[in-house]
Image (cartoon, rainbow, N blue to C red; front, side, top):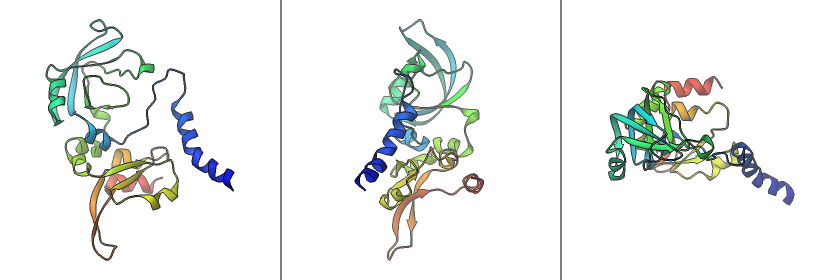
Length: 211
């Protein structure tokens, strides 16, 4: 009985290690929902890549960006993008990022070092929910927490009112591209309470019904 319980507790940890730790020096990080990237970023901006160089800083690629739109910007973000330059490692194994010249990206970053654990995505490849989320809708859910789940249904019972369960390894992962975790009024209790839950959208319902 104790062995079975121990295996149940260790299984998610082992799976995570196997999933992310391939080569010895490979870049590894746990996934984060786009909403989390938005809420924790110093800046969120729509940018166009104007120039790139791997000769200015050793082992780095320096990108010159044109900021087309600013969706979120704190003081640190303003300092970072003041000259429109960010850099990344020139090696994928060190979490380096390759941005293509002339293309539009949404970047949610912290500091002037961009890596593959942060959010960056070509604008034309973003879903409608992702686009509206980064333009400001995700801000409404920053009081909620998104709990990473490995498919253990029993974890639903342990969710706090300010949490949404997210299972990016489920295969369908409808929440990433088609939903956001927002607080809402739950009237199923004796008195109404504020509870975080995945927002229902047409594309989210379609995704869930087809999987």
